[in-house]
Length: 68
Image (cartoon, rainbow, N blue to C red; front, side, top):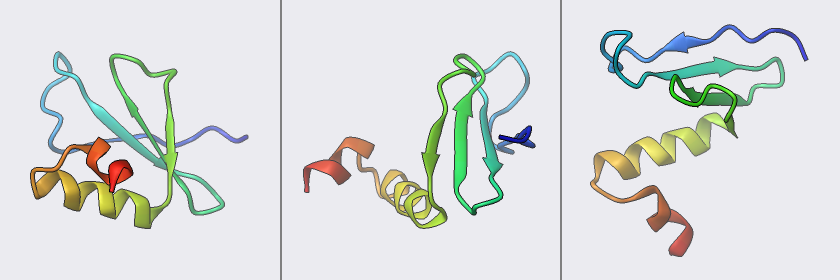
């Protein structure tokens, strides 16, 4: 796998805070990681990320999506 180009979220703040990074892969999937645990990477699709963001903005836990 080629080297990913990670972009820091504009909502992450300065380098001393926990930062969220996002990278797109050649096949169109997305990778997410936190600065605290950079080796733990979550893979998703743009649609999956969109659903997660909408759920969080609505005040739902990400776990709510898997429990119906």
